[in-house]
Image (cartoon, rainbow, N blue to C red; front, top):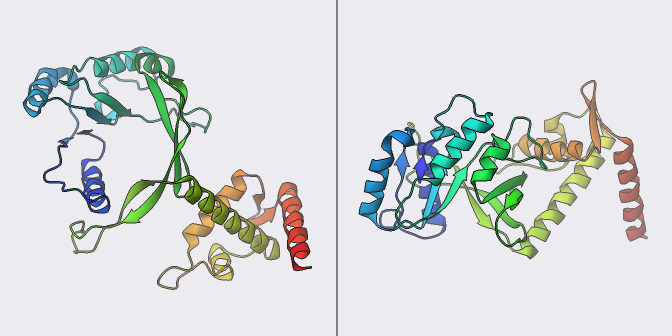
Length: 275
């Protein structure tokens, strides 16, 4: 793995993942090359070093931008040449290569293509994209994929720690791992998310002037330290806004016409269940 974007973060996540998935980070056949460098200047050394290791099965480049040698990441010509250079690494073993990329500026869920667009995509075999919804990430492809189609693969993000991950004050530093989700687990998470959204919708309707902390307290969304989980309120509120169920007017959260209709439907359903 070429860890050019944030080597320390990569090391932290790798260490945590070793504990979560039970492998020895000291003996597993994985090698990291930390820091940024010009691939064109070190290509022969890279091949020589790789040859000493043996056939490589997977190469991860993190990220494309970290090893970009041009001047304009949005230039089709320069990005095309950059992608071509990465294809021509000729690492022993002919490894599958994953190039982590930044999307275009102001990217939307239906426009998650690498900077450089057509020129970059023309040089690669496929564009895999990750879409995150709270703690759930779905991996699929977009724009181009040379190979058989596949159903989206779902992961859940979990905050974890490791005894060796500590800051200068010897405090445990949290990091994140992604775990594959079964279809049943995904359905359960979706159901839980809908319950949270419905609860917050009702709380906002009851008190549009309520602060984020007040909403958390009202819904009993508390941390292990019994403090209001304001971050959770923000996340759920963001989803409701994206669905155009809630809007902000003069500092107050108010239900939109769509949100009001949904709340009415939820109320009728609850009344029918009570009867």
